[in-house]
Amino acid sequence: MNYRLICFLTLTLAICILGCGPGSVPRAQVSGEVKLDGKPLPVGTIAFVSKSANVVADGQIKNGQYKVEKVPVGEVIITVITPAPPNPMQSKQKVEGKTMEATETKDVLTVPMKYNHPDTSGLTYTVTSGPQTHPVDLSSKK
Image 1: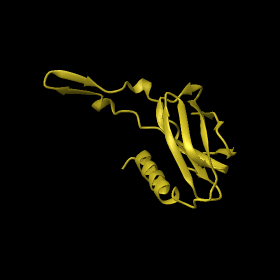
Image 2: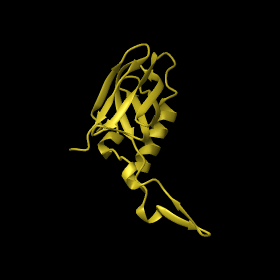
Image 3: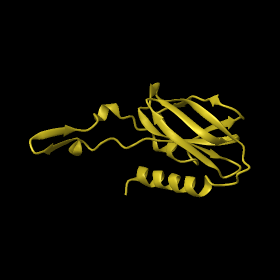
Image 4: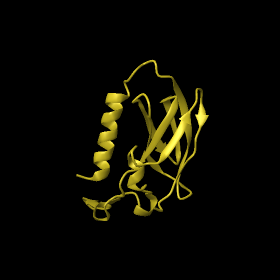
């Protein structure tokens, strides 16, 4: 099974289990831009994992922009997951005389796997009450 799929399913399970945590945890809205090597991520998922209350909030990245509601206030770890690039063998399919082409591989930006998991992402942020903006700059360099 694809490692990215396993990470995504693990994160989704954590959101389902932990996201319904204590109702008394203060929450805030966080929005911003996600870039990889200075380029906005076309698509992906960003998650904020609370360090103290086992609470997770996530949202979709579209055209480099994200907006996540109900992010736990306090110190959080940020993870970013992007879809795997399409398989070149599957990028063109023929259906009764028609050719369907998938997204060009060059249009897909895949973040390094270290950003997929809270233990390795290295991305932290302190969320305060009220709406706020936080840019997330990622690097493909090790």
